[in-house]
Length: 446
Image (tube, rainbow, N blue to C red; front, top):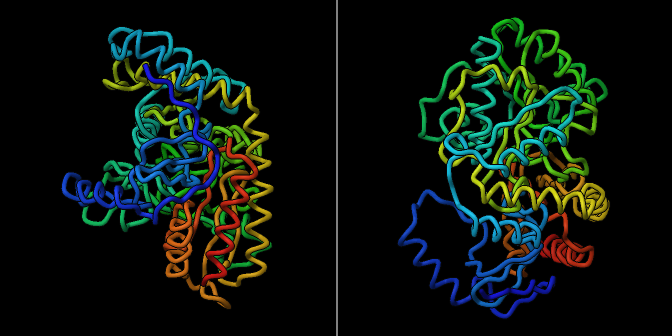
């Protein structure tokens, strides 16, 4: 077996981006794959390690997207790779609900211990964040015997039929794909940058608005679950005002509603906590996880109070590939990396560098309307200077400039004007600062 060494953690351009080999391969992509698939950067990747992507033309690109927040512990992290190789040589599949294996059990034990709350917890493993969200809703409805699910403006929960209904943004996620699942109710999300009311009372006012809508338009006794991202992802990294999540959780508890935290993008050290709800001491009834859980392999989980997770009848939950043994081995390697390398503290350190640099840019360039986020999950919202009017043109120009210089950035936002930063939490200070230097060049070029 060929052993590959890690790539040097440095940006390097040997051709234009895209290079000639990528251009040729991208034509094959166009010919072979569905036109409904998007693409953030026009290159073909050959190898990757930690925070560097190597394309087939030999360019080394700084990855500030982590495969949409997946390679938190670094691409091809050594403990993940070693566990995967060992497991794939043992067996690749039995189906946990046919012939169980220890990896699934061990991942669930870790999740039960890691997630907030000292009560007895149990977990279910599936393949993707959307599948985990669907199962969390299924479980909450079965437990409460209620139909309604409350979600929020600017939310994103997936691309299946139910999770499209839960997701707020129409284009590109929902356009033309309906009709959607019923009994989904959307309530206002306090978006501090665009809040029309008194900023001093945003938490109280938003809670009053949300609770009033639930009580008067749905009936709290009909609500199975309140589902929320602690920091909204695709919606633009919207951070709810302090006190909003605890207030929602309290209302849910008082009314027998299952409070579900969608930590798919925020979980596993990303925000400077193992889970984002820990910032305010919120303890959800159910936590949904995916993305950073397994270092790049498809795995997701639903973890919750034992009485809720046990409420379904036997064989009511499951799936052929859920908790695949190779993905479980990868997850155990990822968990070990998070603990051994203290990635919670590392994410906070990254947040200091990233946040400081972005705020300095905002002070210099009025096209940046707001800097927000936490830890290694931050964003800038671009506006027409002197206003809050979304500036998607500037966003596109900045992202394109950075790509041309070998820095991968992702966009986001309901209004298509947010640049998000999701670097691997193992990224070096030097590499991060190099990428931020290119970002400043991009704003100067505007």
